[in-house]
Each structure stands twice: as C-alpha cells, then as structure tokens.
Length: 294
Image 1: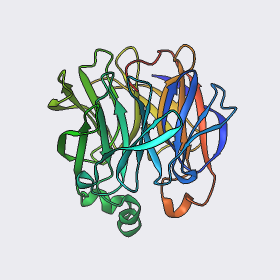
Image 2 (image 1 turned 60 degrees about the horizontal axis):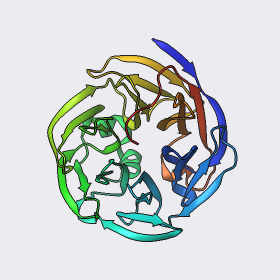
Image 3 (image 1 turned 135 degrees about the vertical axis):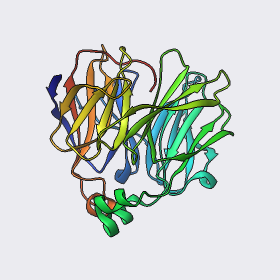
Image 4 (image 1 turned 90 degrees about the vertical axis):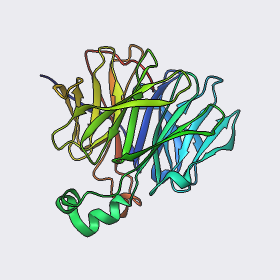
C-alpha cells in the first residue's frame, strides 16, 4: 500500500467542506464563516466567492457555468450566476435534518444528501458506541432536474454524504457515513437512479467526502481519523494519506489533477468548533489523477 503525508497549505477555516477543483482554483464551503471561498493550488489568495447565510455545503456547476450550492440549515439549493444568488430548489420535505453534500452531473441533474438526524446532539447524548449500537434514522437522497424540480427520492440512506459520478456519466457512487459504506447506482439518461448496490463495505470508516480517480478508485475522507484512504470496488484499500487532524472531505486537483486536497478539523461537532478557526486545507501529491465529477 502506498502511503503519503499531507502538508498544511491553508489555515483559519471554521469547518471546510465540499472542496472542488474549478477553473484552476480550489473552491470550498466553510460552514461557520458562512461562505464559499477559493484559493490557488498552493492555498494562497483566499477569495470569498459568495455568502451563504444558511451555511454552505455541497457545490457544483451547471452546463451554463452557474454554480449550485447547498444551503444547509434551510434545506435549500441556491443558484449563483453573474454575482446574483437565487433559490433553485427546496428539499425540506425530504430532509431529516440539515441538507449536506451534493454532486452535479454533466447534464445538470444534481444529487443532494442530508444528515437525517442531528448528529452532534446524538453524539453528545450517546457517544460513538451508543450511536452505533442503536442505528440512527435513515433519510433520502434527492435527485433534482436541471430546472430544480425533484426527479426522485431514494429512501433508507444512511447519512448520504459525498458523491461522485464516473466519467461515462453512468454510475453514481455515494458515501453512506453511518453504515461505513460506499453505495452505487446506475444513472439513466434522464438522471433517474436504479440498481442500488454496495460498492465497498468499509471497516469502521465513516465515509465523509469522496473523490474519484482515473483508475476508478475512490478516495475517502475518514471522519474519525486523520487520514484519507483510496478504495477500489469491493473494499480493498490501496493507498493512504495521513493528515494533521481529522479529515472530512477531499478532492483531486492541481494542473495535472494529482494533488489530493483534504479539508481537516479537530472535530465536526458544532458545539466545540463553530466559534473557532481551527480548520485547515492540507495537500499531498498522489500517483493517479482525478476523474469524473465533481
């Protein structure tokens, strides 16, 4: 197994999520600074791209170049175009708790997950062992049309989190955080999902943000450890990147797409970190470049 060590390239985040490589820069959401930001490939030149009062998470770009961003606490997806932000979709009836990560397809169909329950409160009440002993509520993965209408709702998802779409646009892979697995779906030409299956069952790895590489392996941020693991279909771990603190999302970027950018923080517990600025962006050079979406 190949191992790499990440270097810290940017500090001062509240909680970084949804890193995306776009137009030669790394874009990301910061929950507690309530904005979408971008930095250059070395973590410099931070720029506020858009304010999101409802706490931003998943990001993606439409065929016309406009950006979609999840507004977590009000369960909406917003569209940002020409400097203006407008409502795009309201998915509140499908959310058990905050809306979260998303991926946008080449055709403009998007797939949005949500927590399903208040993770921080349940962890405070039960602890990790208690939460695992009594599985929390499942929730829905929502497919949105290019116009922002709900196409489909997939039920009984265990905290659907980071998602990727393969380069042929035929497969969606979703991290289900609480059941420690990656699940896959076939994507029809109209964006409808079918043939749900387990792509990789992980061993006590709560998969958070994920990204795909050109060999079809998935990099997974381990939300309990300072590491990202590279997983092939079936669950074999082939590579590992270690980070300075717990990893929560990752993205392959840089000019040749071989830089693994990792969003890290000491915790995801909003009661402990929301008023602090301890989040980091870390970076490691890996062997296989990124592919697919995001």
